[in-house]
Image (cartoon, rainbow, N blue to C red):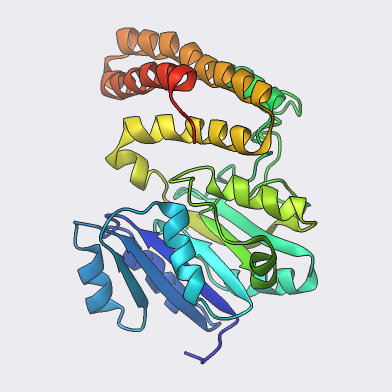
Length: 313
């Protein structure tokens, strides 16, 4: 590796032994030179040993406890070299020339703090990365099923931009954290991720802070990755389902007024409550999905209570 590569890739692992190897091999196989840092959040499945044994050129940072996604990435960023930092999920595979192409795009757009790429499911279909900042309107719309009934409608699908096929370059509010190429200059101005976001919401907060400071967040399909998805959620599904929505409350509390926060609590509770009878019906009518329905109903029941009464810090 070069002494000062243009990109440092940071991968956070938590019991990721089944997937991290493929991600690291895809990085090492790319024609550009990439410095790689793995930050492990106290895995117990052999992730650390596998990285030590099979990827000796990778910088490994071992935590004694699960510090969360934001804090672990901040650890990596503190020692990262080069003009860009690439935050990459451990359950991804970077396709050929994607990093080089994304860096070229970022170089040509110097006011861009964050660049996202095209994200594929394992069957080649497009994942809906990129979405709008949380707002009362967006929370109201996402709490209903209208965006599912009218996915091509720009109003009902505005939060997740369901009408957009992710096929063209576009300035967006947020790109998801599975692939974020971030300019070091922007990080030095805005600061690292907010570690109060343990998991979910940290990239939304970060992109919002970049936007407040005059930087752009761009989506550019010049690069592509495969994202398996659901690795963390599968291990603790109830907790992760609840945490995903509660992170929005944390964002609203941090960046908006207290009346907005109170309204947001109601809409998050509504999001969970609307889905409870749907999954109850699924459990009764479709025996094949009863196990999944039981998880969803438990999560949504807990979510309603937490959205209305839990302390959000």
